[in-house]
Length: 115
Image 1 (tube, rainbow, N blue to C red):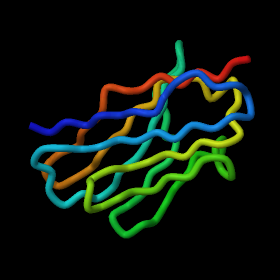
Image 2 (cartoon, one colour):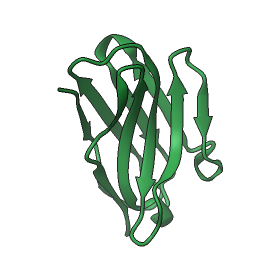
Image 3 (tube, rainbow, N blue to C red):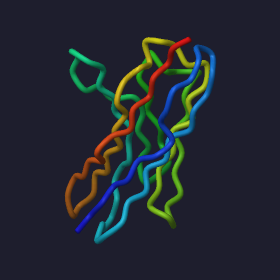
Image 4 (tube, one colour):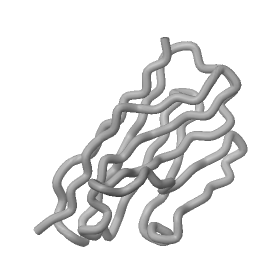
């Protein structure tokens, strides 16, 4: 059984930073991409950032220059470093893994940016 466990969310003031982690366990073969999505109340889930097995990254325009995605292949872990956080970044953040054995989602971690 595949499990994705996110951590690192919390409450932070505007301008602050958080680092999210997502560790995957179980039988996952040939990961093609790992990514972070977010969903704010009343809004649809949207892509934040993704990284391919080859290391190519893709960012949503609203986080370019502020967020950085990275991964540790050996640990099947993906990270999201979030800097210069804004109140509009408040959302539940989900990680997703795309692989030949399936696509998997984590349960999400809450990020709240508020003074």
